[in-house]
Length: 374
Image (cartoon, rainbow, N blue to C red; front, side):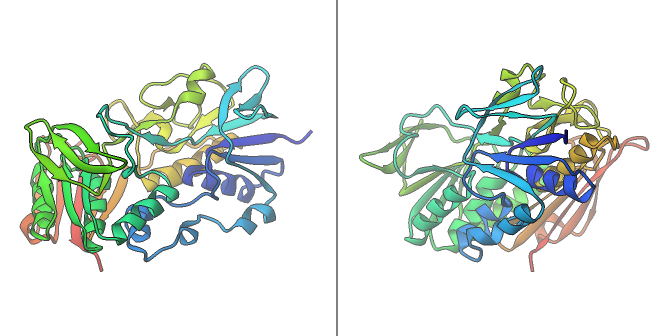
């Protein structure tokens, strides 16, 4: 009997994995199951091109629908996996369907963090995770609005730049004492904050939100110091958590994500994980790492598929990500640390520079590049 491989999560990692399974010669049954009703699509454009209207949802698809039929890949969309019967080798879905699976790949990604703030469920308070979220946010931004963004990380600042470009009044509320401080060195983060502030984005750091207020929909954000910020739209972007429920309910080891080895295999033989949800060994730093970046999702999905086929090549890609913020592009390769010795090429104040992070002769360094996006 031909084998059946089930990929849970119709994400970038999942789509690349099923593509690799077929291209590398697997002739058994492939099932790609996803919780959304959409074909797998790229998420980076959601905070930029889709919000700005330069791309429609169909432009973000990883593959057109005929790709899956031509490659005999079965799609189960709008269906959530509940658990894996690791002894009976079955994937149990929330709708009661049970699928026999010789091997399983979990590409379940992440879910947005929900702050414990009164009023977070008001109409006009949005989270950006799906293409439907992006369309809803875009529709309100097009009308011209007072937009408040909770969270000054990469997604928050990308959204702020897009909202400003659409003519909105934009305020970013960041709990820490600087925006982008969790992902970029202090000097670079400060320069980017100044860059956006000079263009009209209001940045409020060390911000403490007491409540989101309104009647039938959001009207303002109340701060703990008693001040209020008017808001027609509030977008919450305070980070994400790995979507590990399926793994937990299946007895698979979890520690800030689904724990995998260098071959993307979990603590249960025959069950693999890749993408934003996977916590993997890091050859470029100490301990383990869980990356929430496009390149890692794509390449780890490919690596996991090869491991499922018995081609056990360790996954050791160097971490790399980019961020488009208005007309500025930031790229970071490796992992940056505060204690790194930094060699500058160009000046951060010019917004056209490269920073080389040197750690030691025996450890991999890192680098950051900022330039106008042309």
